[in-house]
Amino acid sequence: MGFIFSKSMNENMKNQQEFMVTHARLQLERHLTMQNEMRERQMAMQIAWSREFLKYFGTFFGIATISLATGALKRKKPAFLVPIVPLSFIFTYQYDLGYGTLLQRMKSEAEDILETEKTKLELPKGLITFESLEKARREQSKLFSDK
Image 1 (spheres, rainbow, N blue to C red):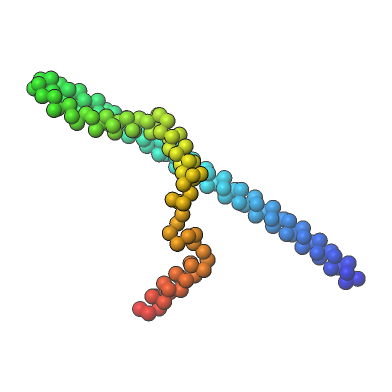
Image 2 (spheres, rainbow, N blue to C red):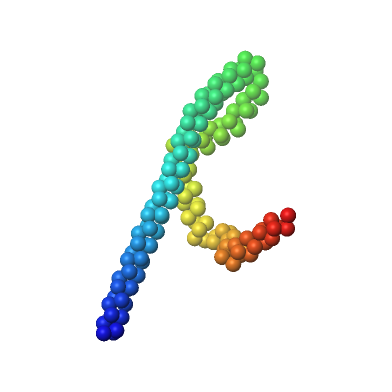
């Protein structure tokens, strides 16, 4: 009699464990999906910001270029054209970020770093562990209890 009862409990416990594993996996998948969704939204905001900034900076760059070129021609001083050079670098960078392939190139470079330069990504003192967190927490609680 006890054997039948024990067998039934073991099956019930096994079913419960399977349910817990399935639930944990589903929860992890949802968490990963949510993280990716947040990352995509942040990237979209960054691109949108860059495009919006480009509109204002492009207007400034155009007015500044026309004004400086006019001043250089009227006064016959080519030195007025010098500020156009750094401004053009900023304009080109912002255009490439907002409408060009800069993000794809950055992604490719990041993937290359992840594959070939793994040691540059290591944290000082290695990964954080439960023990290191507990040690830091105990030390911090000692500081507060001493006051």
